[in-house]
Length: 288
Image 1 (cartoon, rainbow, N blue to C red):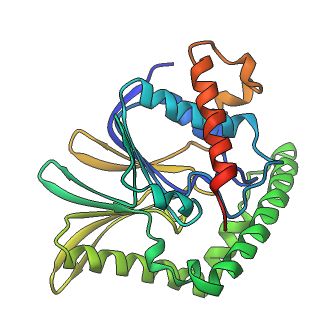
Image 2 (image 1 turned 30 degrees about the horizontal axis):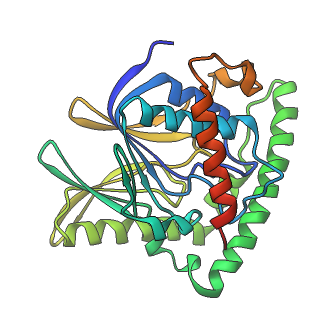
């Protein structure tokens, strides 16, 4: 597969370990690019809805591909989110070209970039509201499972896929208002602190726009998610672009259903062991 060279790639809200995660498509995307810097902007593994009963091969493979990036010399930055918040106690950890951080400041082509997950602007992730959000997340996971059955029927009958969760969010005024408020708060804070670009995740709404207030202006970017939008941010040749996985593109990983059938250069014994160790560590330490 011919790989595209990209200077910086930002993905967020993958939610590995849940039924909604499109891990196969993400594997295909990760195999198609060659980034210099790769940033995971939170919610990589879903600690709120994580279950030992559900972690398919494709989810396992996503971790292996990230490890492959690290071993090949790509700078990998893991920014913590609310669904993988237990990793915040390890913020500041640096192992060669791999770092775990709560936020990142990058100077790219003379522009100051502020990158963080964004749950700091969401009150539902704290206190008692957090537990309501966790149960809401479990209900959302069931909605995604039903949606997959529906889409299977729609495809078999020659119809386009339909996102129930996206339709629900788009039709609820409070959800629309929350997204607008979130974007405005992030932009206002970034302008106040003198940043040129602010990059978030969290709200599963891929976006590129410019905000202006009395203090100045900022470019607001959101990398979206790999549950509904299958999106990423890419920086190359001096500009940011929003990538969205093509709807018509059949994931390569669908042909590679089991790890032991994957190409040898794709999975090595050492990578396999590292992933196993990572998951054991996660099971031991993650908590609500």
